[in-house]
Image (cartoon, rainbow, N blue to C red):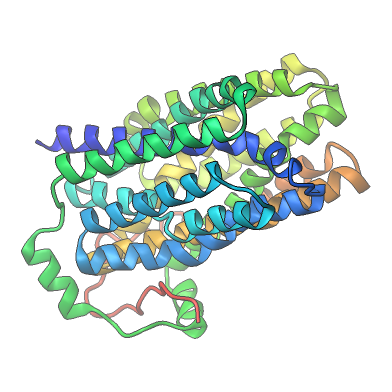
Length: 407
């Protein structure tokens, strides 16, 4: 039963990411047809992440209160509406509205992580969460290629396909996926439910022992990694003269590495090494990888550097989520994962503009060197605040609430 549920979540996340990655590379070209400048295109890209920054914690908290299945349906429904608006867009304003609606309801990955937390024990949780990372990798292998092929028939065609995939996902969840929260768990969450949260409670959550350092690590690792992801095309063009087609092939190669790392390696590694040590050494490996990215003298060396980059990124993405779920009460899991997702979304608002500015003003190596310095500082921080600090169990009734609503 548990394997069937995990396979179901894997399929749901894969279909969701496939739809997302089909339209993502085409958005700049779609926006150009309405006269958008490069700056406005950057805002369009950031609008989804900004909306998700606000919406993901709320979706996570709603899933704690009302169950994972109904919130998954709500989230996927919002994505479906966003893709339909995208397909029928007749102005730049409609493009922005479509991405904002999708972002505000785009907490389905957060809820999927919470679902996996419900149906796995602490020992197998990283393996289960690694399946989501594998679904990410596979989605980004196939999606951009499919979107590129269909775009020759018009940019609306990939959007219609993405909407169709979202509809399939909606049917799968509605007809196939059972609720993972038991009546007993819901009752416990209801008893422990807190009032609305403010920025002061956000500060308290970030100050909590172990949970706070995990969230800090999530943000600063995410900022460095998001910069690698979002400005890679600009980097490749500036440093090696790589065209769009070859950039797509390299990113597909990274997708394959990510799928292998998170689908097969993470579960085996986490069964042997504690989360705190994996986070610590993962940050160190990411630092070296970003330095290699900055200084790579050739495409061949760059492809070799991608291996430790994908390995450390896959480990950190999975293990940070797993460690957070083990460090809070059951009624806080959805909200905590939502907050983690929001911090990740915030990095994807900051990274594209900051990384692009660095390449323009300093040079192609600048984003990698910036990420290297950031990871070195984070390595020292993780040594002091995460390594050998993991609690065996969350302390009941003695922790501050995890914020899920920004006021």
